[in-house]
Image (cartoon, rainbow, N blue to C red; front, side):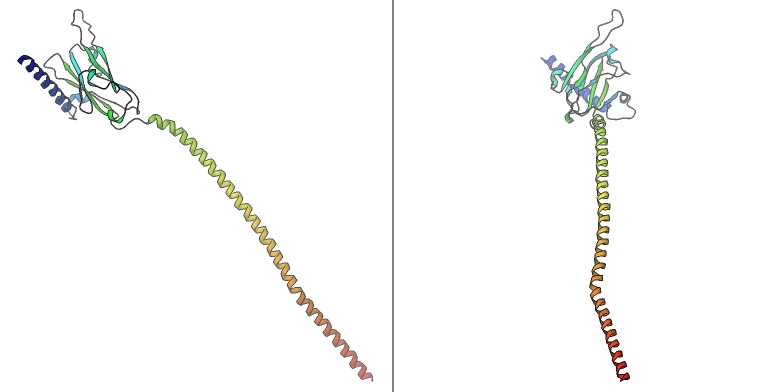
Length: 245
């Protein structure tokens, strides 16, 4: 019983050490060699993405020195088996480590080698750390960090889709504005010409009215002059008759 308790305590202490170690190793020290093992991916909302616990500089799938791997999720969850995660959000696929030398001890089976996140949402954004332990006690664990939509989701497909629609909509709006503007200009020019014609007609009518109003007085003056001339003629004739008499 005591040996079982000691083994459980040692296992728990090892796991805690690996968690603290993985976090400190990926905290951002400039001289930390594990900063080389960083992968970033950016996908749209509700898409599916796979993150492999491997790196071209490590070749985990062909290294017989690998003992085990486990994951640390963005919320701090320590995942050692698929039973520790919601299978509606995450799934795992295994990878057998290949052996090339005859008589070599068969490689381990890495059950958590490939992590697949399903229908990505904001709750799944962040950094995923895969901690790789080795059979040699002298070789420190390696941390592979995956950044999933760290700076936001990928909207490039939406931009490409709606850019075309936006251009078409802009062209249609410009054509409509040109049509409306042309109609307004034509209407204004037409009304301006009509106003000018009406002003001219009104001016002619006013002149005619003025002539009509002025004509009676002129006719009266003419009649007055005619009567004065006739009177002067009668007076002249009467004066001539008086002289002869």
